[in-house]
Amino acid sequence: MTDETIEAQLRELGTRLDVPEPPDGARTAVAVLTRLNEPAPRPANRLLPRLVAAAVALLLALAVAMTVSPTVRAAVLDFLRIGGVELRFQPPPVPPTSDPVLPGERDVTLAQAREQAAFDVKVPALLGDPESVRLIEGFPPSVVSLHYQGVRIDQFDGTLHPYFGKFTRAEDVVPTKVDGFDAVWVPRPHVVIYIDRAGTERQESARLATHTLIWEAGGLTYRVEGDLTRTQAIAIAESLG
Image (cartoon, rainbow, N blue to C red; front, side, top):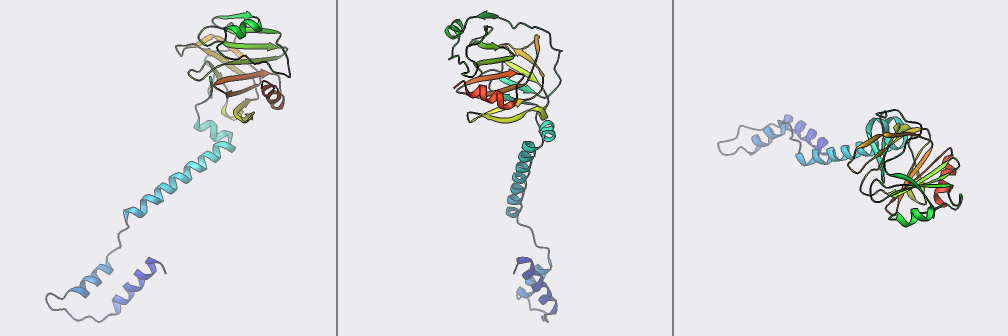
């Protein structure tokens, strides 16, 4: 039996009791009947748990909706950062140029890149040694780009600062995994802009990137870009070791 049921029965019983007028000082029955006719106060400690439960349920529902619905994800998120790459869900500030050169970018050999980079430069076993290598030295540590026919692999330390801003739509960002690490797959062309050490977008560096897989592992950020399917990109990424 609930508290509300007991209260209703007591009220009903109180209306049928024949209680004589009490003498002065004997007011217990009158006090009881009066209290029964008053609205029962709702304890504050009952309301707080309900509000907390409602808030938790709302957050869980929002998290689920963001996971399964690109539209909800686009409405809630302004950007998403994966290591040193920041995905921004807004139009790019400038159109891409045909062949931009980043500040401090130059051609090097694979051996030179490994010597000058502050990290272990990895080569994918599926592709072998790159056709060309570029080193971006605008900030320490360097960004190393391995270039193959139709495929580009970037790797750099991206733990402290976003180095690239990618402008796309939230509904085009697909969560995935690379060797168990969280990753995102962007399956359509999008504008990429280099961000310097001061946090300034170098708009002259804007270029059009193709399908891209991005992930962070061991404090390093990786990008596999090219006319690839997600399965192909993941296979190349996981062959980096």
